[in-house]
Image (tube, rainbow, N blue to C red; front, side, top):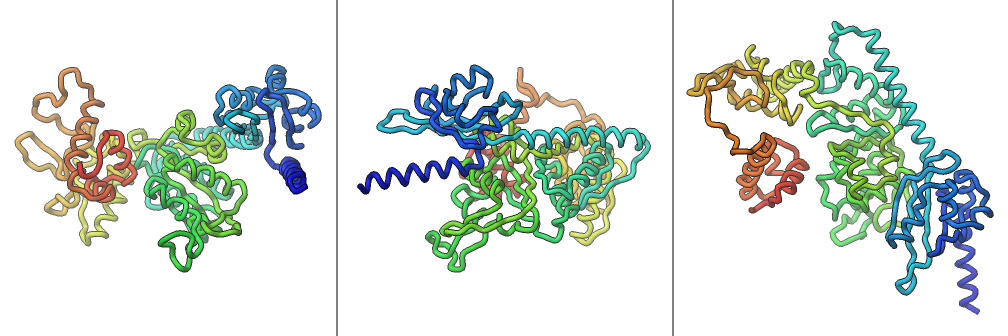
Length: 478
């Protein structure tokens, strides 16, 4: 009697889940026959619930009702799958499916899909607005319009960056998620902070999280917080996570491509539900924040590699903003250098100026490290300048060189005395630079106790150090 009651309760629970599901659920047997679907599926796939339950996923795929079938992929591989799917009604959905085994045998496939059509329309509309606004700027601002636009601690002078500033100002009043894309050091964090200042949430907190800097074992407790006694060593008072701290303000997730897969699914749920649950807690807490993320990686490529969730990618990629490297906007270098020189003078209590010859070095450089490298070069030049002039030529056996170290690649400075080629026979520039970088890392890694110390020695960010050590197969202490 108890067993029959339990079975009846299980059926009622399953039916309630299917009836109330916001996602479009399919339950399919191992042969592809559809056993049940959620009511909302009818609008997306263009067939009634009864019609869907009377057919197979093979038939739906063959007739173009859905293409491709994620359930068939799971039946074929026996593994969970996630795909982009188009329906016969013209909708675009993201579908994922999971196998159910009994005694080692596949018996069911559970799939769910979410409609992305409205999100894609929003992205297309934003892209159209970008094109129209860029055309407006081209028509109304000629090449002689060189007014600077200040962005916090940055100064932008180039046309491409002025357009970027105007577009960010247009998106600032909304809560649409912005993805900052660009090489390391281009100023993604500075632009994210400025976007927060322009937004309606400017009086709230700006919570800056580097996803690559938090150990994976601590990530959940840092992001979601915890209740008193949730785990060994937990604070007696508990702790609000970074997601809660961003309530009413802006959450900036830098290095989003480094977010662990387990945290990606949890972040997706927070974005969808607007609530978080602390570790060890039984109740959820509502959170309301503007989300900005940044990466120097190809997120679409990470999705292809299986390192980034496809559904999270589409949730985040609403307003992509690509910040070009410094070598593609050399007009900005003068203002950036002058601003940083002012900061150095305030920091060290001096009033140094740049030597006129230094501008050729600065503006002509390639700056692979972008703004961060430019600032590091200026600080070295400032500290090594004996008098009040930074970057003044000094005599050397190899000809003139600016104080503060060698200029960056492509500096346009005076040609040095001919010397033996630093390239090995048959070695290209990229391979030579990689070998030189590895040699520097290997020589310093043995004397540094942490990646933070090594980052400080190199003048780069800690996440960059972690990636470089991994790429070269090096570890601290080796």
